[in-house]
Structures are given as structure tokens and as C-alpha cells.
Image (cartoon, rainbow, N blue to C red):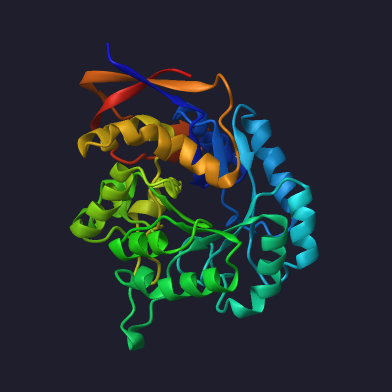
Length: 348
């Protein structure tokens, strides 16, 4: 039976929530084939200090210590250069920027980057990574909506890269050809994550289907083609960040006139087999190792762990994705629930 082996898979963008929900979610990182999780800080309340990040890491390790958790801070007015240096010394890897109101738990997000230049200078000095949610808020008067919010953000990327050329920057979960071309045009300190679900979806797939709705939304077929092409190219500055974002089935499926359904697609529990299935579908299976392991690890300076690999096995008849996951009172519905994919984890 045909198998492939991926060394130390690493997911450089994942949401693990808190409390009882984390107890359901955190073990799925390893179950889905991954050894490393780069943990997002947009919790309630957000992770804005070193002490909070370390406490959150300890909470996750109590749930499942088999995964390596890399922690981040939420870019906020309370953050100081002193705290950046403290965070670096404590092993915290990055700082995540959310424009105000564009996605889950981003009400405290930023409105202007200039006020944070002292923070970025300190990050550049100590070698921390700036992670950018690359959208701007919708504005009907300026003709800005979810379909062009990413393209409208790209000038901010160029300006930050020009101001801080040694600062490692990651444009998160790119969805457009314009974003791919923008990152390619920048220097070696700028990289980009791509999700599994954006390699699968276009706007037609989430319009009317709440379980495919995320931020940023999937765009046009040509945009999806650009994502697939850069993965197939094996460009070393483009790698996996799943943006696996768990929400309860109720919050995903029920919307009101004043409250939309939750934005997020959940892939952690099936991630590595799903990636193999998707990359094989567009002729890029040979690029899975770079995309899901070595490229991201190289950019984040987290070498592959010698001897640790995950083996995937081809399933000609298909392997059906579980309909839902449950623990105590919490439940989740994964991406493509009930569909069959052609790969499964053989051992890890």
C-alpha cells in the first residue's frame, strides 16, 4: 500500500480556544498529524502579556503535552517594548495584529500601525515575528467589503516591510492572487501562510453555506488557482497555517439580523490527510513536506525534530470524515464532514 512520510508537521496558525472547549480541540492537533501548533492569541480576554501567554501554554500542555505550542501576543495599546523583550526571553515567538472588528474576537484590534512602530523596532531587534491578519474593515462609503478587504490591506504590508526590512513578517491566510504576488515581491523576511480550506473553496462554496464561511472569505477561482500554483511551485516563503477555527454548531448555523454566523472553518482533526488529498488533486503531492513542515520551520527557525515523522497511507476506497466531535457538552463539525478523502494517518 502506498505511503508517504512527513517529518515533524507544523501548523503555523491555529486557534485552540480556552476552558472545556480546549479539552476537545487541543488533542486534535496531534490526532490530525501535527507536532507543532502556532497558537493564536484572540481569546477572551486576548493574550496581551507574557504571563498570560505562559499561563495559556501551561493550560494547553495540561490538556495534551504531546504537541509543541508556540505562543503569541495580541497587538494592543498596552504592549510595550519592555514586554516584547520579556516575551522573547520567555520563549514567545510572535505578535499577532488584527484590524479592528474584521474577525472573531478582534474588537480590540488596531486602527493605525504608526503608533506601534516602537513595538516593531523592539521585535526587529530581538527577532520576534509579526503576524498580520491581512484585511481592513468593511466600509460601504469606500466600497470595501469582504471580497476586496485583503487587496486593500496590501499597501500596509509594503509600508511595514519598507520601514522594518529586518522584521520577519507573515501575511496570514492569503486568499488572493494579489496577496501571493505581493509577498513574492517582498524580501526574504516576508512570508505567507495558506490554509487547507482556501485551497479547496471559492466564493460559491461559502455563499449560502455557513460551515464554509470564514474570515478572510474564499475568493474567485483564479485566486484559488494562484494559491494552488504557489504551493505547486514549492516556494519556500509560502507554507501551512491552517487557521483552524472551532465554533459550536449552533454559532455556525444560526444567524440573526444583528448577529452573523461565526467566522471559521475547523480542520485540525483531519488536517494532514486533508492536505494530502488536496495537494494530490492539483498535482502537488510531492510538495507536501515543504508546505506542511520544512518551509514554515525554516522561516520560524524551528528545525525539524530528528526521527519524528508522520506516515500517511493512501486509501483507494476513500476514508470518510467524521460527522462531528464531542466531549462533555462541547461539539464540533469539521470541514467536509461526511465526505471521503483519499488519505489517512498510518502512524506517527
